[in-house]
Amino acid sequence: MTNKSGLEFKVGDAVVYPAHGVGKVAAIETQEVAGMSLEVYVVTFDHEKMTLRVPTKKAKTAGLRTLAAEDTVSKALTVLKGRARIKRTMWSRRAQEYEAKINSGDLISIAEVVRDLHRADTQPEQSYSERQLYESALDRMAREVAAANRIDKDAAVQLLSKSLSAKKAVVAAAAEADAEEEAEAA
Image 1: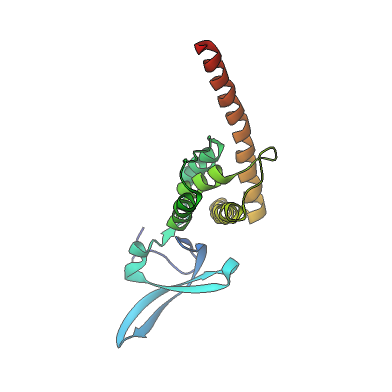
Image 2 (image 1 turned 180 degrees about the horizontal axis):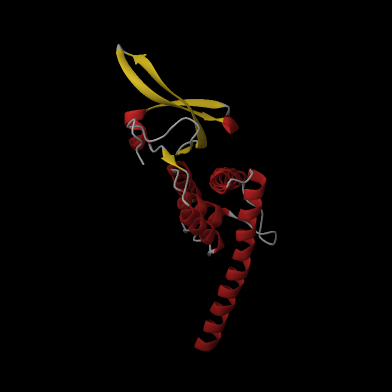
């Protein structure tokens, strides 16, 4: 992926930074830092109105990466259709784990958070912190799916919602299968 100038990304590339999501390489600059010359990617995040400077030599270790490939996006959408895996630990511990998954920048991990925290209309309300984490994960995932599929964010949210509603059928079938197994065992 490295081009002939030795840089992994070029101006105009859409990139993902783990803690902030999808951004765009606005420029590649050379800056003086502590008397040394340092080449940096200038990454802008329009949704956060933020600019980040990442040293080109440290981009990989900082987690800067290209958008998810098509197969990764489809795997993430498949994860959304799965059954929620909620551990029986204290909420504060689960919240930390969810936050770590969101900030990992890994699309599959973010999809797991969206899947686990998604609530259907028939389910009880979420707590404020649960809803905040869910919306953060959904937003992060929608932005990357939108950029990867070259669609707008609203269309990406609809695509994710469609996958989450397909989850209802999977969950209902699993619950029905569980009930049948219990009936046969009795």
